[in-house]
Amino acid sequence: MPSYAEYLNVDDLLALQRPLSEGPEHDEMLFIVIHQVYELWFRQILHELDHLEELLARNDGAHARGGLKRILTILKVLVAQIDILETMTPLEFLSFRDRLEFGSGFQSHQFREIEFALGWKDPKALERYPAGSEVRSRLERRLKSRSLWDLFLHHLAGNGVPVPRADLERDVTRRVEPSPALREVLVAVYRSQPALAELCERLVDLDEGIMEWRYRHVKMVQRTIGTRRGTGGSAGADYLLATLNQPLFPDLWAIRTEF
Image 1 (spheres, one colour):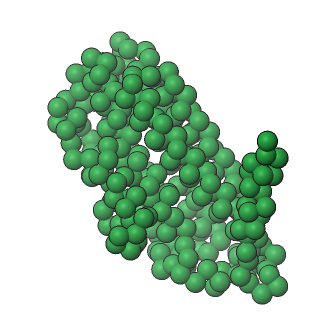
Image 2: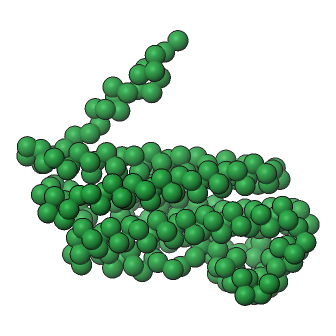
Image 3: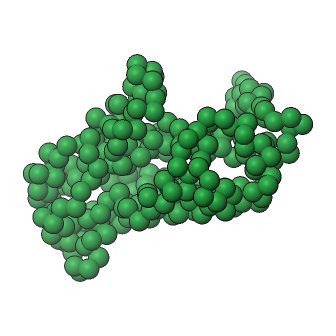
């Protein structure tokens, strides 16, 4: 039987923190650890989203709701980690920032995969990764696959809900767009099918969790580098600001005025 350290490959894991600054600068270790942990949680979120596809396909709404709750709880951990990053002052970050050179969280392919899986599709995002690379191929598969919203709509249809055909057959490579006809159906679901309505609410929770993450992320960037351009040539806070208040599932928010 493997030991705790062997099972978790602790020695390999602890060998992955390699500061590049001279000294090295004290806070570079924090920066590396936090972002490596982010990538591990991103991996888990993708794992959960893939499992959600299986659960919805076999009409297991109860476990699907549990899976959504788990993803939301992970998002809360991601947001809480920003509190730790904000213990680092702008001067402390600038002491090693130039070592990032062209590196940027903007390049996190796992977070792009999460966005695609949730329906935030943007074919232009593929251009940031080399053609033919494994990362590019993974993103292309996510782009062409049904998003969580599409899986949800087919789950509703499988439970006898009259989801408009246009919504079931929409172009899955595009972001989700508002559908007035679908809103009427969703209101009826809330009024007559409590289990499906609860699943709707878990999607709203998830959407709100992503928006909270985006908001805290942009405020952290503004607090740390102000209006400077981000590392890796990204637009920094300006880019992040453009992603705020844009729900993944607009119809679930729109129906709040129709009850």
